[in-house]
Image 1 (cartoon, rainbow, N blue to C red):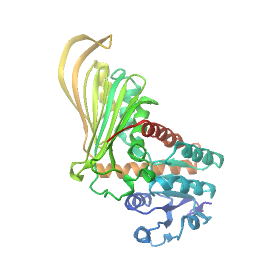
Image 2 (tube, one colour; image 1 turned 180 degrees about the vertical axis):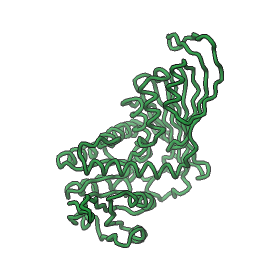
Image 3 (cartoon, one colour; image 1 turned 135 degrees about the vertical axis):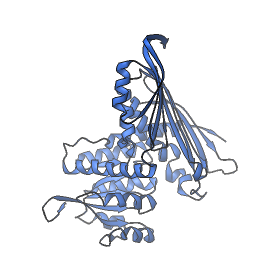
Image 4 (cartoon, one colour; image 1 turned 30 degrees about the horizontal axis):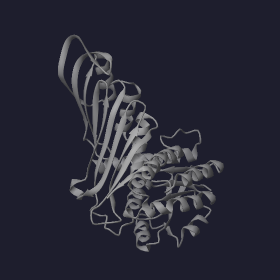
Length: 378
């Protein structure tokens, strides 16, 4: 299936299904990757397909995704259509022998995502969903902070997503839950996956969804409580803000401090904590370049109690890091990193990826549980 460049290095030939705004953004990053060639596109909106072809005049515009899948030289399909099409189009691609990178979610139903995972495994093909949050350096640093227990055990967290609906007209497929799956499934999978990477698998305790007054088919606010090993996380998503006010915040509280991250692709982190000299050095190592303010310094170790534990510390600190990279720039870097990681696996099956098919399935399992158990509040 693979073509080669003149020096015989393998080139991955990629085709795109769905050439809307995000696909245009993603393909602009794809074409920067060495030994990757975007060769085809299909979109039922021929204007979108034509615009994508402007990135590279050699891209072939196909009349159907079936015609595209029948092209033997295409190695990998990138699917960026609305969610209700993901299962059908991913399955057809896998049956045609193509690797698949799909936008989230994997499908509208967990059973379909499980089927796709099995199908890919049986054919030794790539099947992955673009859950690119785990490629963020801040995400990885927080994971190290949690897993090394630097601030003690996790106690509680929240994610608050005050998202814009400025581009989402009442007729947009986003509001049609037969097409989007609803906010938990269409959008929440990103954040269920993030917190699972930090805290392990969680269980839905409760969920609610609110209807927009006067708009019977618009469920624009959802929230869920998820139980992890040592504590609860509250997830809230509301799509009702002007774009200029779109904002997100997430917080993790531990026995010896708390961290707050800002933006849905986190670019900035603040921490307040008490720590020993050794722990301060660990934090300095984990967050190179961060600004650390010493709020209090105790010449002899101080002892306090919390969570029925004795806590010894010498410093109370505030740590600030981030903002050096703008959100859009970081987003581009994460998408590129995701593509590179997955393509590396296509070329070398011993390559260990940051995300794989299990992320697609597990995040959807939690989202589906939240959606199915949600109490509807009119």
